[in-house]
Amino acid sequence: MTVTEPPVVDHEAIEAALALGPNGPEVNCKVPFHMVDSLHVPSERYYSREFFELEKEKLWPHVWQMAAREEEIPNPGDFTEYEIVGQSLLIIRQPDMSVKALHNACRHRATELGSGCGRFPANQIVCPFHGWRWKTDGSVTHVFGREGFASETVRPEKLALHEAKCETWGGHVWINMDLNAPPLRKSLFPAADILSNMGVDNMRVKWWKEAVINCNWKLAQEAFFEGWHVKQTHPQLYTFVDEPDSEANRQNVKYTPFMNGHGRFQSGDAKESFGGKPDFLQAAKLNQAGQDAMTLERDITVFESVAGGMDTRDPAYAAKAINALFEYWEGAGIPAPPRTPEVLRQWGGDIHLFPNYLMLPMWANSLAYRVRPYNDDPEWCRFEVWSLTTYPNGAEPGRAVLSGRFDKDDADHWGLIPRQDFANLERMQRGIKNRSLTETTLAELWEITISNMHQELDRRLAAEY
Image (cartoon, rainbow, N blue to C red; front, top):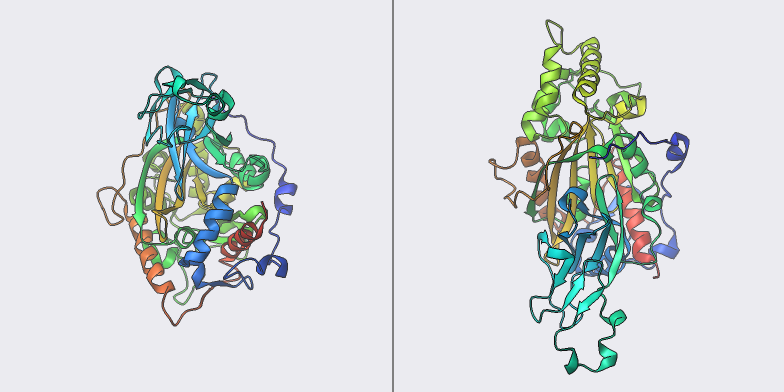
């Protein structure tokens, strides 16, 4: 693994990259069920076929999206398929270790050239129907039965596989089917800069699973745009001692909507008016046991090693545990994130990268979600989950492979925390179509990044390409 040096972070530029706010009539007049204000989301956005078709036309073909982890394709010739609303692309590692994204259709009779993941031997793509061949860069090398075709139909430039834009950042491969799209890092600003500062460039896949859920892709991911739900959905994780009538969630209290539709929330010490003394060790153990992500077994071992007879609710213990974690990383050869207030406040928080990818960094780990429409149905989604971590130099795992698609209630493959979250999603999709409801109501403090995502979505749907 190539260790990425800590980035130079322009904190002032990040803090200035705030959301554009509500759209005007020039956008709203072009979008059915558009956002009228920042505090309400029309229900139809989550099930309307008209709205879904507009997303298929104006969003997915023109937006940067996370198509693969780089370790899915570690060697030249390795490929993985990325599918979105019926469009399939092959993400292929090239002989020079760069990555290309090619549209997955034979230029002869449209046969798909690859499925799932695998390897193209000798860096040659072979059509299984008639044996036409291409290099992995998309250039044609053999047309079987060439003498049977009119010469103007089999010119090499005409038969080359079509490319999508493809760039890498943060251990991910990103694609955009719009060849006129702006550069990736410009589109991901400031979310990518924040995450690079968290050390995500050095993280690799520990495990990767997915579920298919009866819930619109937007409604599903919005459940993770805020930490406010923890006290009700995950009561075991909330280890603060509150007054009996307290409704404040002291864990996640600062929410920031950014430009480009991105957003974040930060942990409780981001706001001085909220404090409390959580049980640091108990919360870490429950997090590890509940999902094996964000906090891992190795972190618990470090935390327990310095507990002694200390009160694990005492801030002095939390500071000692964090010190021990940085010492462990140094001794084990694990690239550590910078120890800055910005990094520490983001641990346990969330960053959404528009349109459909989320990262929840903690220590030298991260939980990550990708949510996509499933089966051309606005009311179903593919929900993928990664546990990412930073390995010691030279001890990185091999090729990352999807473990499988598991039912959302499968306790053998999902921990308690994701099962608690999944339980809400299909209930929301059923409720959103209730005749008594025309819109959802958002909290100005806790849920402003949900509104920001929808405002950006409307701008994309109103754009002329």
